[in-house]
Image (tube, rainbow, N blue to C red; front, top):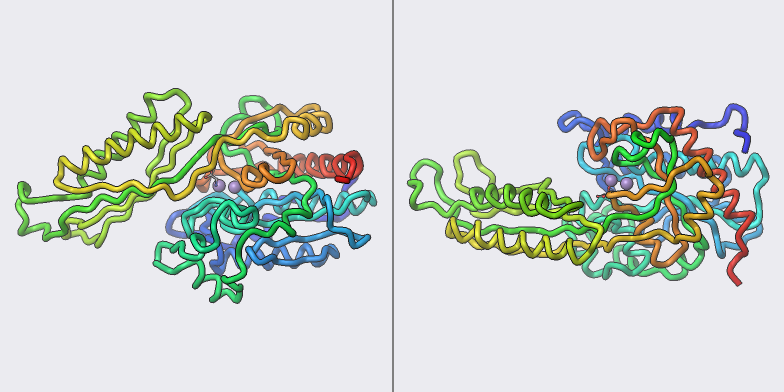
Length: 413
Ligand code: HGY
Ligand code: MN
Ligand code: MN
């Protein structure tokens, strides 16, 4: 499809939001859900969608929908989109690339007068789970994959509840929850995302069609010890949870390395009270474990649980391990995947080790993903990058995919 002359480019759209959420301490960007930065990104998207004449609404779970439904029908829609929130100190493309590419693809569809099924761009809140701890919180709420009461009680690192933060933002906490009506409008979902590994570098291609998402989960490990004075407490009298935590972190690496394909990470550790001259009374650390086989993932967590018990006992401490979220391995809809490969014959098929809202939606809607080359292969870090030419190729591929789905698939009967 041709691009409207003088139209927006993906690189140009991303440049507009480059300053939002820059993190001078960590580097990169920190755009937690419902922070000023993320709210500013939402305003940016709504302004662009409105400028394009799309009907914009934010549903009760905070999902923004921008519709092109000229005949007033919102059923069996072809939907694309992604997220705008980030991990702490994340890259500029994880999430926003999919949203900016959707706007550029919609410009191409409009210029070509593509019609046949309604289409929409969806922006899902809290995909990273970096503020309230549960990944894909918005799409999980939409699909009923998390109970509203549990979601409302989630707290951020400052102890603020999701309910309180929602209310402070002007949303209605009591309304969140499964939304079969909103979900039922979706006939197909395609998410474009920056590739977060080296696959496309090694394959030498700009765009890939997604095949699967590695199963993954998050567990909170709490190690309770005896807080005390760093100077007056002799070494043999200590019950130091920090020492147990250190031993556990080393054990986690060994446990994961022993299983081919396993990945296990402790990326976050919080001592209480956290004073330089204080022996901690408690350590909270978060474990991220992933593997293609879900039973293997859960087996790895059991090994970590036993290692935590041992490490804690050696220090006269006590460990508890609680699951915070788990997403089974997802294989995308094979027919839809193959259809996209037909539309994009030069695009290889690629699995991803990163989670996405598409992985949650796949259980409810025919779902696919497109990945765009990241020449560093680094993600969840400032070095994540997409070259301008590849970003535009991604948007063109998304436009061709959406055009195909809008004009070639029988609406549901
Ligand atoms: O953690 C993930 O895999 C995703 O980036 N949220
Ligand atoms: Mn991410
Ligand atoms: Mn993402």
